[in-house]
Image (tube, rainbow, N blue to C red; front, side):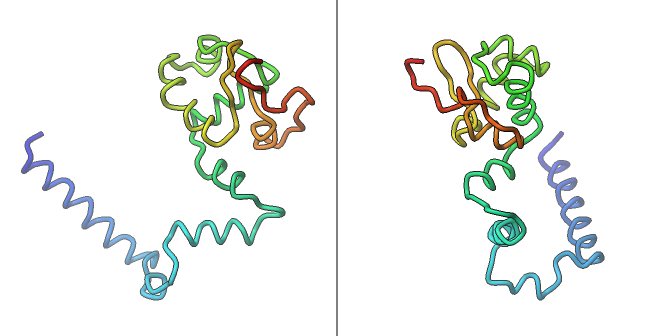
Length: 146
């Protein structure tokens, strides 16, 4: 697609989005004059509508996409929380091992839902709790040497 053609298509999409959001009232002036960004407003909403919210739980729940959830769910429900090897986990979620390792794992590790050990991937206590499950005593976060 040429640069001119791409610019034309992008412009058409932007015009449609603006007219549609105006028509349904999503971007009313009173919304735009809020002292909070959309992200801040979402966090405030989550804090107001949850029992015992924590920043970690909110961040993890709002940030998990389909693959993140699939990996965490398979690790816990199919493999009892691990340890499980990367290739086995990838087959369980029907993805390439590299995709799981490069796309899903970094996010899950950063949010404390999964750890990598020499024996394989292991779900943390937070990972179990994120899925609304009671973690076993063994779900305490393993160390690098476990």
